[in-house]
Image (cartoon, rainbow, N blue to C red; front, side, top):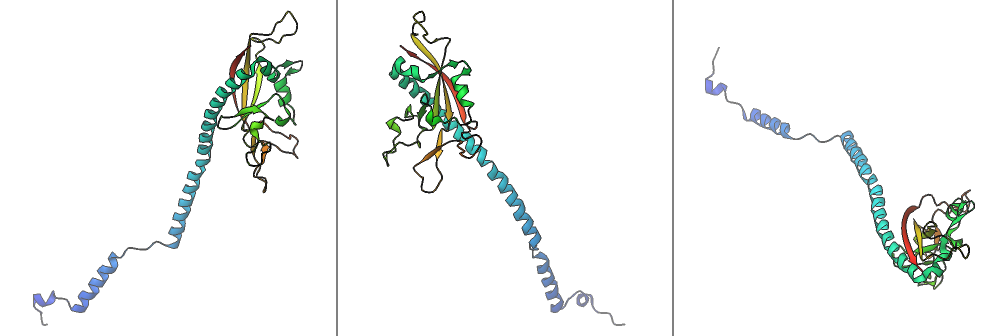
Length: 232
């Protein structure tokens, strides 16, 4: 048997070396993602995005609620100034008081057809807190159509007479009070823009349902109470 020299036995042919190099290159090529893996990744990403987007609705409502609360504070200051300018003679007809069945405010609120546009004792204020007045005041006229409009009436204001501090004068023995104390109830929104095509300049009472058992649902409105006085 013929034995080859050691240096000849350890040498490899160019063909063998090329094959080894090709195998090394193939081993270093990364494996691509399969279609199932891509679909699974997209599904997980979509679920995560839906969860994140779901957080925006309560956050937006919270921010809107804070803004409305700030606006209501401005309305409170404007209302005090307005009522002081009206004086006791202008304020007295607006004050809701106790009645035989309980109280004017609770009695009217309990009605399923209680329409805030028909209540002459209510005041309304704009969302930015720059306007306050009765429903029919000309300050609410639309600047474009020059007609009465409900678009700017965001806050609904009911004035409740404090009958302990300011009892109603029933006879000569009960003179008119020197100071008229009241509690103001702000509810909002009073009106919302009409979404019907062609009615861009119109507004509807919030919670209005003409075909429902309760035509005017006020239960979903935000509410704020504050007190004030008017001197005679």
